[in-house]
Image (cartoon, rainbow, N blue to C red; front, side, top):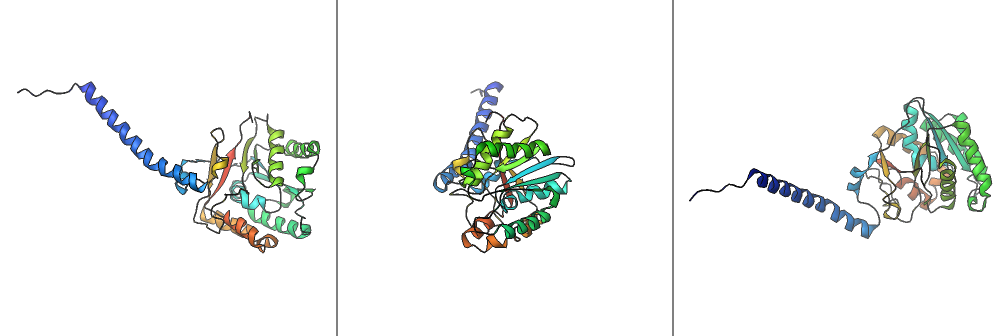
Length: 277
């Protein structure tokens, strides 16, 4: 009996189908458990960090403008990013939006702010204090906020801006983020990144876990917004922790200490802004 061989075209097709099946199986093994984990825990699993792209870091000659609602947000939210920018000799300016005086500690918190940002590499001359009342941005005149923010952006002319995520559940953060996005909406010269501090399920766990990755909560992950990562070196992480340690007034409050230290992770997290937002 003569042996029959399949045509080479069919062999290639079968081989290709087999490869596709293997790829589908491998992807299923990764994504299905991840989807189940995210559904129950409302946060992406640690393995999802490898799906995020790296953020662009300002280089020599670039200008980075950071909006910080309160003294400490700039350090816990984007401290590593600021460190990397200043190491590369980018010019960094920080706009401190409120006075941090909700508990009558304005002088103390301003002092802590200056010390922390100095450790991050930011010059004292590049710190701007808007002195707006802590916890009351929601009731502020939006036209006034628009002008204040726009004047700072127009004066500095940054090509990078980092600001609070508008979906942050803290009113001062969400208002700051919304106003910044409104002001820079049509500015194609700016690369804008938003950072998240407050969410009911973020970060997880709310404990000091510097060996873990920071990942976005499921409720702020959408198809039209891309999340990016900044992986921190050991030296950057130590420097960020040193800067955070300057905020004695906040770290002595148990629930604030838990939140602040839970943002000391192996990376920082940013969401991009698209011009049609």
